[in-house]
Figure (cartoon, rainbow, N blue to C red):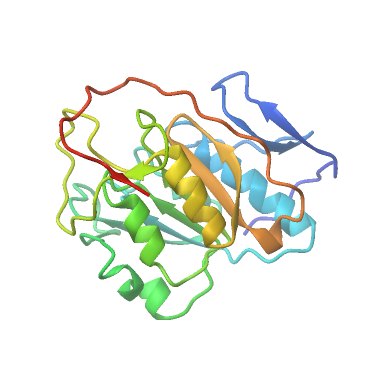
Length: 235
């Protein structure tokens, strides 16, 4: 990992004027030359990693992305990989370079992925599979330092799609993923604090790496997809 830039130790919750994201941020913010992620998630992750390192915490420079697409477009870890991190990317239909491992990841096989099976320390995990996101994280035995996971911005309460190991989103309605409330509750149950929210991703850190109180983050529903007539599971 590259040498850390100087930081002011004062932390504050700010809203980015460019994208509207809210996250804890040093006065001097670190920006990537190129951030492939959709709403600046990589830049947020990198800043949070540096805050943890500055405070004496340990974040292994290893990133795993489940739902990586072609490995570049909308990738949450490609920027980290280009800054010296080891990266493992998985997608059931990568449609890109061979560096993305073709694998349909679900709750049954997530713990068998190489970085987890080998017991390596993982600094950042990204999950964006448009479906079983909640169930994959719930099944995962490894405890990455930070987790970036997609939530469904159209859903209220604490709900998710029922588990279907072969689920594929039809891209025509909102029958995918889990709500903000469901993933926040799962993160807390697994020992994480929710530190940042973008339009459709939540970023968590292990509680022992972030002694400060969890910031107050809320979600306003966004009707960006037609409502499905299928039933969601209340948790």
